[in-house]
Length: 340
Image 1 (tube, rainbow, N blue to C red):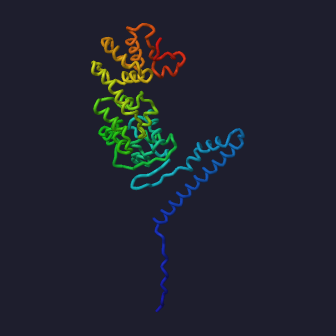
Image 2 (image 1 turned 180 degrees about the vertical axis):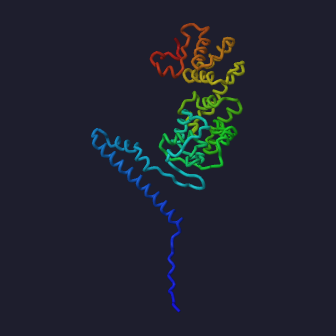
Image 3 (image 1 turned 90 degrees about the horizontal axis):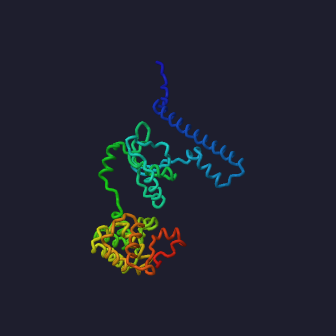
């Protein structure tokens, strides 16, 4: 009887495991190759830039940052939670053909808002054949890309372009009234309460209500203050004086008493020549039939001047000019609000 020794069992790695390991190794190798090639490109770029002695350090830095090699080195894609990620890898995203066109004015507005306060609202994407298609938020994506900033995106493969179109139709976009209510509760700034009262009680437009609050027509700076929660107002006495001045024209039958151009024109006169306000009201009341809704601020100021001067002799006539015209031509308009 011959005894045969049992051969020790040799553990063999499964083919699938070997395959997956080889795949991951090849992926990491390809990544390191790309990284090293990009680093080599940057080194070469630095050499070329150094040869150009005319360039400053800032110019050298900017040209490196703008290079494709640098951009690919600094691309990141970080998982935040669930299906939400943060990235600056703009190249992997594509626009859905069925979606709306990019709005240049909206992109510029978004860029300004993002610079001031980045709320990081995720862009909705769906993955199709290894491509990331933007379903909702293409204007935001363009804004972030142009700013060179990282942004959030959310993967939702159950969402289609038709669903987003329905959502856009059903969703009500915030207007200034909504922002005023929000900012009143957020900041406690009571100027927003006065603003809401003017809009709700008298039906003034946003611009006119803001003009009554500030005592002058709205400009970009005051508009920015409004959106930041920094709305300022003149004294209660001055506000009431302006409101009563406008309501007086309503009482004599001026149908466009709430129109922006009409109110702005009255405010221009009040700022330049407050003593003319009562006399102007009497002149308009007397020449009511000659009043027309001229449409523009300058046209209303010209009409006010004609009516005020109609029955006055030359020494008592006045020259009325809008403030923006007065600022452009100060020497020529030095008699504005004064006697001829």
